[in-house]
Image 1 (tube, helix red, strand yellow):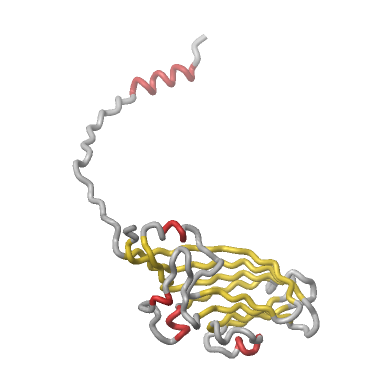
Image 2: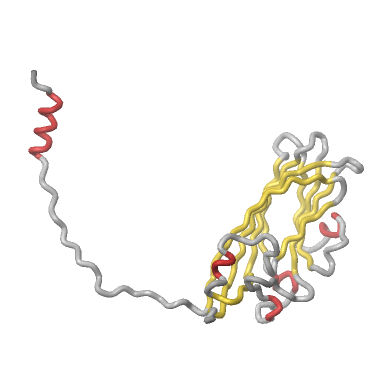
Length: 215
């Protein structure tokens, strides 16, 4: 007995034109660039924190240097260039209150290493460009998300890029005596009522690497 599917396949193959052979000519010369004197790139760091908040607590984020929050590929770039300067920094926070009936309030502000400690929620909230939020367990306000961008020069009020004390190296952070920072403060809204929070942080560093590492 003849298989109709097999006959259909034979008719399809008979009517099909053979593929043409395509001749490919490979280029004889390609343009490559030597390493440049400086390189601009965006690097990212992400982390999660579980916090107990009995009273006001704060997290300090470096703006002139990444500190302990080293982004991926940071060390590898120093194999080519000797120095790095953070041209800008972008923060994204997702904060959730994880304790029932204990809301909290949040402030994110710009400061510097001389004035940031000791401080309070109100002191940070009164600074220019501060961002404030409230988080309530359950419902639509149980998770708060916000983003903020800044630069070291904007916080300090003058140009820092030309100061060697503002540069990063693979082994040393900037040595500037007073450095710009960003501060995240969290505090229970109900006086005497401790609360808890989960924080997901994503930081993008806009980095300029410069001075080729010849040795």
